[in-house]
Image 1 (cartoon, rainbow, N blue to C red):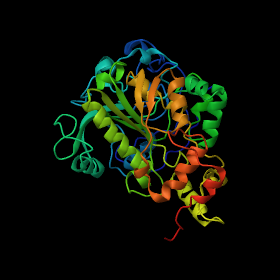
Image 2 (image 1 turned 135 degrees about the vertical axis):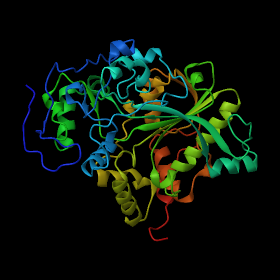
Image 3 (image 1 turned 180 degrees about the vertical axis):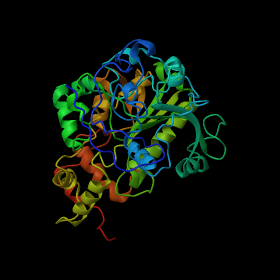
Length: 427
C-alpha cells in the first residue's frame, strides 16, 4: 500500500498555503495518465509527468531536471521562483527533426531516456491544453562551436573551411541536443542483470531514502534520477545519422572537467575529444556526418573529489606514478576501477536512429562492446595520435593498453609499465 504521512510544513513563501507534506503519492486515479513504455506512438506511450505543481497528475518517481531539481528547490524556498510556474513552450520546438525511428518503440533499445521528450509541445498538445504540466526532457538547437585546436587545425592545414561545416574563422556549425535521464526501471534492471525489486531497493538505500516511491509504488515504472544528462553534437545533417549508407564518425565521451575545460595534462580526455571533433568535421565534409555524445560521468562516474584523491595517491605512492599501479590506486580509494558502466550509453545512439558507426574514435572496449551488443555495427576504430598524448598522460595510456584497451600499436610489457612515470605532485 502506498504510504502517506502528514507532518507540519514549516517555512513559507509567496506560494505557500496550509498543507501537509506527502512522503509518497497516492495510488491510481486523480488524473495520472498511464505510461506504456515502448508503445509505437506518443499517444499510446503517454507523457512523462514529473511535475510538482499538481501531484495528482504525477506518473513517475522523482522530478525533472535531474540534480538541478535541487537548485529549483532553493529558488522556490528563497521566493525567487513561483512553485506554480509552468514553462511557456512557445518557439522552443527542435530546430531539426529527429525521429521517430523504429528503435523508439523497441523497449530493448531505449530504457534510459524518453525518445518523445523533445516533442512534448507537439505530440502532447492535447494534454497540455487540458492542464497537464508536461516538461520536455530533450531540447534540440543550433550552435557554433569554437575550439583553439580546431582553429590551429585550420592554420596548419589539417582542416579546411567550407562555410557549411566549418567557417573561415574556425567555428564548427553544429546541431546539438541536451538530454535528461528518464529511466524505465524494468528495462534498466534487465540491462544490469538484476531484478527490478533489487534495483529499486538499492536505489532507495543508496540515495539515503530520497525516493520512498521506489519501494512503495511498484506501479510507477519510470524514474527521473537526480544525475547529470548528456549532450550530443552533430556535424552535418542529423537525419543522416539513421542512414547506414552515410559515413558516420562518432565519439562517445565521458565528462572530465579538469581536462575537457581546463586542459589538465594528467589524462588524454581533451586531446581525444578535440581529435574526435576534427575527425567529425572532416567526415562531414566528405559527405558523411559526425557525432560526439558527451555524458556527465565525471571521474569515471566516481566524482571529482574521488578523482583528485586518486591523483594524490598515485603521485605520492612509493616508486612514483607508474602505469602498473594506475588502476590499483583507483580501486584502493573508490573500491572499484570504473563506475561508468556503459550499458545505458547506446540508448542515445538508438534515439538518433543510428544503425552503423563507420569510424568510432575511441579505444574503450567497454564502449565498443556496449554499442555492438545493442545491435549497432562498428567499422573502423580510430586511435588518438601519439603526438597528442601529454607527457604526464603516458602512464594512463600505457596502463589502458596493457589492460586490453584497443590499440593499433604495440602493447607494453610488464617491465615497461614500471618505466613510464608521471611527474611528481609538486612539479
